[in-house]
Image (cartoon, rainbow, N blue to C red; front, side, top):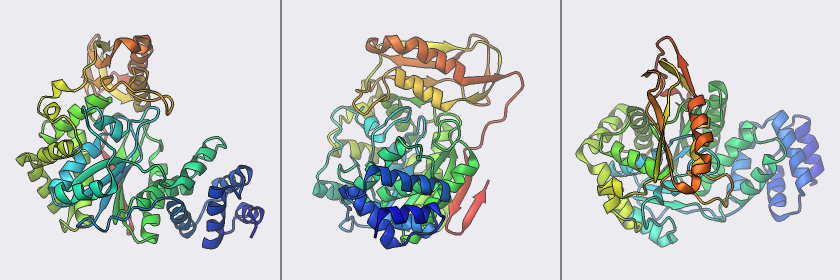
Length: 443
């Protein structure tokens, strides 16, 4: 078997066998297939695509290229949630405690943020002392004891995917649905999930900017899950504006805690309830989404979901007093209001620009080695559909003196991210579609 023959085969639009895909991935992982040949193959996939079977085979080979987590020692079905990323997306911090309180164990491996999207691990580290490094036995025992653990991803998980993604990033082949889908799903499968709920974002702050592309990606990932025996559903949710009001690590912890108290933004609570409902159904704790939602709302109103977050923080060494008193979380030295330059109604918010503004204030990483400022970020005061008057506050910047130089540009980006209309604007739907093995349901 030769790599050049497999490149030619894919270039000509033919399907590769499982063995041929395995040959490429294993060979690339160990250096037998050079970068230039793998780049040529990736470009062939970009133009010719892959079948559902090919994509599933690629996913399994990438998952098997490194550590595979065996969660069989944890009691119950493991239902994982994955978001394709966005601005202000702190759903895991709400969902984990909420779902665990409802009896579905959550053994979560999350990543750090890079660029304008935030990472769950960074947000949790805004809580003093919170450790995301747990040994395997400690991780399993904690999930069995309190139903919940959140840790950083293993350094040797899906190394073939990491290597291939780095190559795609510099060869203009990132935007390939089969390659994106297999990249996401290989991590979920390597992490040991029995079932997977996908939150596929669509809009200006998402990787996929259009609804049709988001649905295509969701369908590809659901097809992979089905092919490899994992119950998988995908929710297509809005990212044409940030989720909730807070963007930034400590700021998002505060908003997540407020949501678990039943005092958070309506859009964040609703998206979490939708995703959590699917997790409960896949986890066997409810027969329907309606039944699941009723259970979850009771867990919120009773305080059990908030108690589960407190248990998580305590178990992983975090300062529990910061959950009781949110003012003890990292606070910014400087607060700057961004004012509206016109009257009207908020018609649009370029979510990516808000995320970049938060990064300029220190809340995100421009490179992997950047040090983030846990107190920094942006808090919106206006969302799409809200009325706004000339000189009224659109958003507030939170920053420390060390990042003052980025304040002017951040403020300009936030102001320009807002589109103001003279006519009343309808609020956007939160969820556009549901993709299951049975098909696509648009709302």
